[in-house]
Amino acid sequence: MTARGRIATYGAAGLVVVVCLFPFLWMIISSIKVLTELYTIPPTWIPEAPTLGNYATVLFDSNIPRYFLNSVVISVGSTGLALILAIFASYGFARFQFRGKTYYQSFILVGQLLPTAAIIVPLFITLRYLDLVNTYLGLILVYMIVTLPLSVWMLTSYFKAIPRELEEAAIIDGASRLGVLFRITLPLSLPGLVAVMVYAFVTTWNEFIFALCFATDSSVKTLPIGLAEFTTEFNTDWGAVMAASVIMTVPIAILFLSMQKYFVGGMMAGATKG
Image 1 (tube, rainbow, N blue to C red):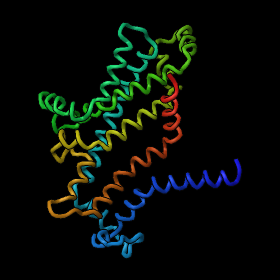
Image 2 (image 1 turned 120 degrees about the horizontal axis):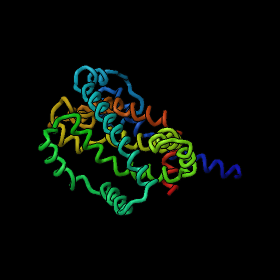
Image 3 (image 1 turned 60 degrees about the vertical axis):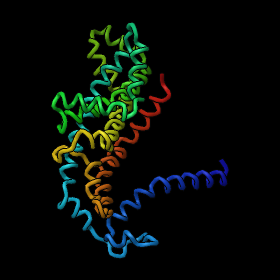
Image 4 (image 1 turned 90 degrees about the vertical axis):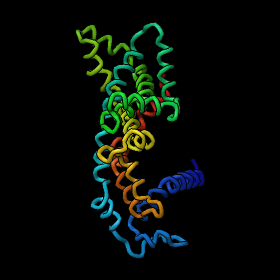
């Protein structure tokens, strides 16, 4: 590549990075501004009087810490449950032949394509019948249902790419099917497992509609619902909203940065292997 080509490539990449990071940068800057400065026109890029008062409001004068804990419990629970079920279902689809296999896989994918409005009423009726409205378990099961179809689809593609000969050799040596799965298949599928885990966790962490309908009690409300509590009929505390948004973004940023290598590899493998 010529010098001019490198400059054009780096310039385009830099522009994309700036465009992608601008909302996060603006969110952080706004979180340390006083309320009057947030309404200044034209907006100021550098706060004239930086303050941590918005973070103090969020952490000590609101229910955000409780909502944060709720989000952690629900996201970790639903992600773990979806990952466990997806592993066994995907391994079955990838390694065994049975009648109707193609149709079952198609039905799973159709479940992912259903719009939220089409399933929210049946889910609410089911949860109310089971007395699971406003409970951790209710939201965990709902989020598992939402994330499981794509998780199964992604892992099935990844398991199919692992050579059968490795598993057959282990079976000849006396290993059971479960032993092959946990000792050979899963370690080789680590990038795919991480990709599914990150996808399920982020989807659950940011979900709003189901949490709004199924968690009306403050004891189980999640962070996306908590952000709306800073908006009243006549005013919105944008400083507190931005501070809470930063707090909400930190776990996702840490997860992506720590799992970036495996996540990118797992997504690429799931997209190209069949």
